[in-house]
Length: 273
Image (cartoon, rainbow, N blue to C red; front, side):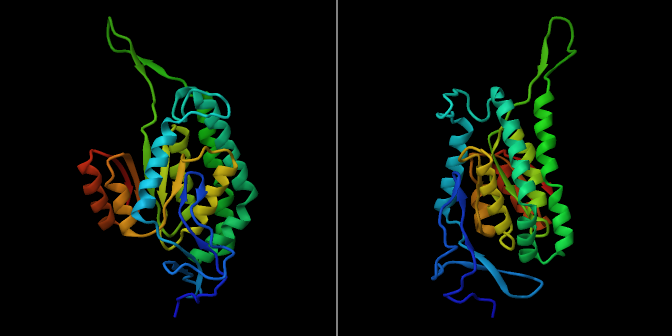
């Protein structure tokens, strides 16, 4: 009874890869046959839908993130990639721009979260009003960060340097889609990593809309990608040998499987279970 009709005008979301959504069904009369409805727990009715990412989408997203990690900016004749330490000031400026976009779109994003997850509107508007602070905080850290020299004994010079890892996968849950995305994404971008996010298949829309805002704020194409779907998409991501870190929030059973698959590639894993 929750299936959307073929002529429904509900928004249908698709994967966000290399700076744009790969398909746009928002204004089409006929919905794609392979769409998956997102049902509001408050009304038990479909409020939007999404097209699940394919294995090719996963490949494209990881490739885009890998290329962005090493890419230079042709528009500014800058020879340093996104991940390079010389881009620290640029990354800080973009994080501040993302914070500004979030602040200007708090109400719209909060209302979309209410649609998806059924939490009270007042709660979500307050919660999302604090999200810009995550990006402002890490932008500030970038501005004042200093490398350190640690005592190591006579005849040695021990310098501590922080370097970006590479392509990071972040898997977020249903209950607080944007809050947990912001907490994971802000430090990852500040460090110079590129990111592929897989939000819960029960709440994908707000993360896609947020990714669009990041591009509007100046985030280079490929630095942030969002894939949609369930377990199959997550497994494709986590098992890929190009992924250097997985950051997962979810249940223990999924956490065990992610640890097993990532461990086979000696991939770093952070989990909140």
